[in-house]
Image (cartoon, rainbow, N blue to C red; front, top):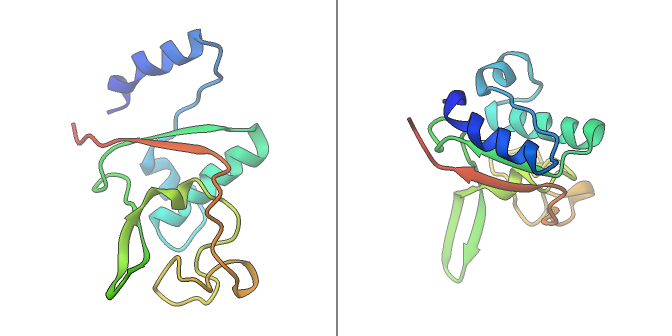
Length: 130
């Protein structure tokens, strides 16, 4: 789908933003992490730290770029796989410090504290499949 995003990329560059693209297949093949969401998040973190990235557009629906399923609780309703793109934006900690299969629990932040919910980068998603 990259060719479909090139006009947007060119327009952003005309506005003065430095732009770069990365294909999911490349990140999956060369990235570090336990699964694809973690590899994508680590790639974004590396771009933030080394290049000063401020804005990220995830170009694809969740079957192309998976949302991280996280812990959510409202009243008596409990969900361990609520789709959450904030995972790609709030880059401090790993959202799973206790190492179980549930991300974003109240004790999954640095040192067993709260998960960081303050975004270092702004993340948007173009939920497209073609």
